[in-house]
Image (cartoon, rainbow, N blue to C red):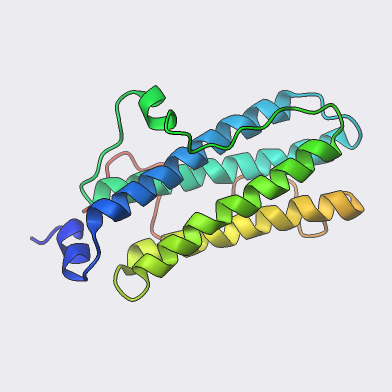
Length: 189
């Protein structure tokens, strides 16, 4: 039986480079999940609860992104470091503080999400027409990141965004359409 790695290699993609990019994206997603978890506990000032709900939804979707990326890494016969410090220590996550005014973290988060979209465009470019599974995964995550950016930008300009629907925490609308289960424990080949 041919492995997922062999299929992707036969399509002409450098699988080691692909795994490196997926690993970098996974580290960024885990770092974002951590940052959003801290921010949801941090006093954010005005409009505290509305912003907190947006951040919780983004955080939960980022966890789904992390899970889906890890599954794909293992499908391609890649692995992640056993030491989390080694995994996150390569500077994938962008540093930022916790300013006292709620608009400062939102502006910073919006810029951070805008930067987070870029690697997924690169993954789409690398895999388009060659590795459909990774292409669709990267495209789904890119779409959700774009939606996160829209939520934050709308919050900055008008308050709670019209697009944002509280109560659907972590639903990952684009990612959930794929056959990538975030609660799966065994990677598939």
